[in-house]
Image (cartoon, rainbow, N blue to C red; front, side, top):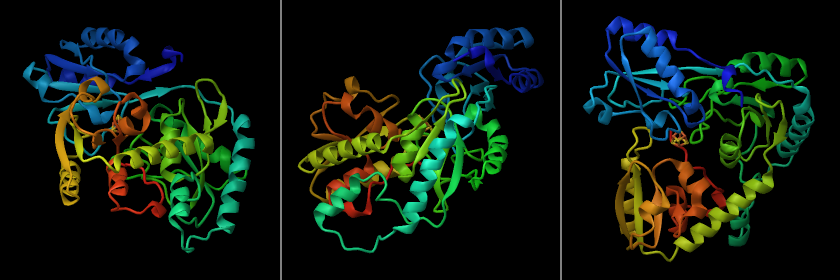
Length: 369
Ligand code: SF4
């Protein structure tokens, strides 16, 4: 990744600092851009009379805004970089700073993948039969089927999405893809998302039954894994950093679903659960955690509420419980499960293990709305 090709829009921030005569400002940047944080601090301190303190703890999203601890330090404004505003209030005045990358990849490498995926979507449209009665074994198979658990499709449009630093490319890509013959839509999600085509690791609410397959503009497989796990739809990835095109394989998603299924099974006999509550403003799902505690009580089991800012095996494995239910960032349970000595499951998976939800409903991604 060429960091010099990222554009950090600091002018608005500097203007706000000058206007309000702020003296102490906190800067929060995502992990991938921390190498440039000192340069940004220099730029802000040179252009204004404010001193800048870097919020140097790991930051993976706008769910993780600097909050009251920095207020105690005397910070007047938080500059949060590289993520967009969510439907949360951290209690601190916060300026969100866009980061864009100037890479503009060629469409050609991804076209064969899109053609293959359009054919899969059309095939699905023609062969939808979700009314059939399922045996328990068939229901469990459906749970682990990356595609077969999907809700019926009404169309086979190409959904065009991206990670935040590439979203400025979407309008132009929309037109180029339409010219290439695809029926393209840029989905608009719910309140947790700010921009058309935006996806988060915990929210794919722009998905609907007219979208048959996806193109993701971005790098890495974090968002693609979540999107395919959530929707069961084929997804192509075009990387603006390298220009490479690949697809998210259904085999990979089915491996994750098999793992989730195994964790649900091994939680069935558990009687004592730790229920994790995230302390970060955009991960705190207290009501859900309390509902899980009541649900466990209804089934004669015990749930202990554990509140944490960061979740890691070394912080929870030692508690004398049989399994954990995670209500903090959903991706902790999905992506990091193997790191934990005990089953770490999502609230939906707990409901399946308790028999409150049926296998045949198919796997449901733990989305934060
Ligand atoms: S996936 Fe996790 S880290 Fe990313 S925005 Fe959602 S809750 Fe935050």
